[in-house]
Length: 338
Image (tube, rainbow, N blue to C red; front, side):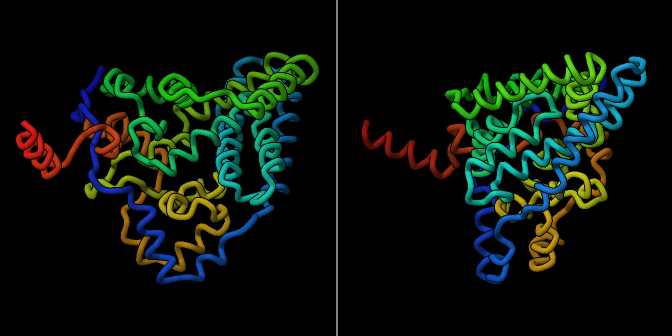
């Protein structure tokens, strides 16, 4: 089973997450950062080409052997569909259609068609709270559930957890923090099921459809592209920072999601302008430890006992944990009342 993780509970912070305060400082010092705000329509030209390519691949693989289908689903389908998943993430921040809610929703549903799962509307619903309430015990569903973290706390079980990541990522918020189903989610589900049926029945059959849906599941699991799930908010560095950036070549196909500190500081700056933000305010980003390899993140996550599902930071207040001073004050007030 391998080495057991040395962490048996989450880290708890008594201070606010760093992004709001850093954003305020940067805007005070560099007001020109606001010039980076605004719509970026580049995805409107790129995403349709990627979607059409995936449909073509689905058709091409209908008569291929299963081993070839599986290999291509992992190597190509998983890579491209994870890129589309991150395009969905980018669109969820309204960086494409900044003022048109309808077009943003429709574009999000379109992006996820080859992924095979109607994720865009539900993702936006939960992801906005990940930004607004990062580290919150309930509202930040990017953090593993305590039962989940306790179960997968050894080298071998961490590998299993990574493989099953797409299921945990999709089901965790629905179970731990359910929200009412919205009309747009019904629309998204209906459109996705019709697309899936068309792919199965008229385009690629079972093999072509596995390339799409199977590629999505493989690409979110034990896959180099999935390293971003681990690199972004798990504690890797001695300074215990809550968010870490990745600067490397994978950003070219992942919509610069690696610029994650920059992204959390300014979620409404589009992916193409995040490197420019880093250039404008280098003293805020260059000193921060960062990743240069998502594969190394995955290897370190599995092999290092100090890193595991518990290596995340929660806000102490959301967990009902008081500072020592607050506990003493509460105790004194209780004594006075008695």
